Image 1 (tube, rainbow, N blue to C red):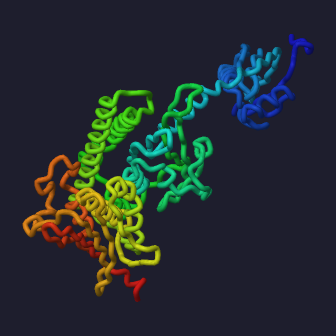
Image 2: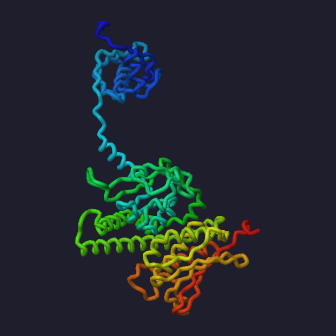
Image 3: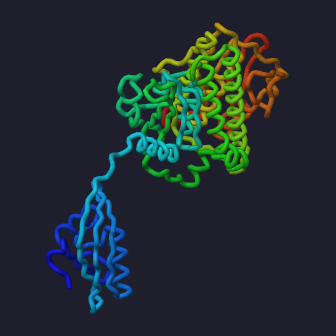
Length: 458
């Protein structure tokens, strides 16, 4: 028979193993473990004990263990089923609370990093000055940002992303870690995660940047998805997602070695690391070109035209490629903020075309030259002209320059021979055209014609 001096608390459960009444000790434990009164028993081991006693109609007793957020509770509990099957009587006879050990701060940080890496939809590698070394993303929603970061290699990542705070940058990395950012075209909320790469007690030699959203991605409707032009072939669907991140890691690690962020290194080894990084970028570029090739040649590919400003897209492309131009002492004569040219086209596809045209102009123009961007409005066509001071093209070369894999006899320049072919296919998919005017020795003018936006000019 139970002696009242040995009983610390009593409780009663119903046929559904819900705690109906309980003395204070068990009521507090129930609530600290996330339960309610009345409500389903919140302590898993107690719930199991009560459930078994009720089902087998046998009195059961044992020690249970519970975690209430602050302590580890060990308690001796006796459970007796009622004869009428209406539930159980619960008796608590002992109670020992042991404080939980202090949180392992390093361990918790590492666990959070593991989770963030798993859910990140964009990964970039930065040097000690937060300059972009490499970037990888398989997210269609982040493709424009990934492109901008890829073209912005060598620039601080804060030049490329849009922070919600609008604060001036650069800032210390600890102030940027966790900062919310805006992604044009995305309704989700995004945050930056910066993982420092450093030995304990030392300043970071670089960073791993993760772009994370706590909201799940919602697939767009079929027409919008077709407009995104996601590759569904061997490269776009199977190879590209698998290869992007490891190739980007190779580039980032090679850049870390080349810039001696990992420690002193002989010049020969630094040069070798630079060659590895450049080879990685060429491979990554080829992978992207092959993926785009599958997209534009797919019978299901359609563009998603919208009302855009061609001048603004051209300004963004010129800004993305500004560092590359300055490295060759090339001046991009861009458009003033006041210039505008409304058109009907898909923003991200036009941006892709401009990046290719301006990038080619920089690649094939001599140092100290100029690349100009001009606008024209002809009847129902909106025209943007990208002109360079390079070697120009003969009539024979102009006839084949838009063909697949055509490089006009060049080798070792990092091109795949697909950029102009893909760009023309994209232009035509948006009811536009891409053409070239040139003379040998007098530079080249690449001309993008798109339908004028009637709503803007009417």
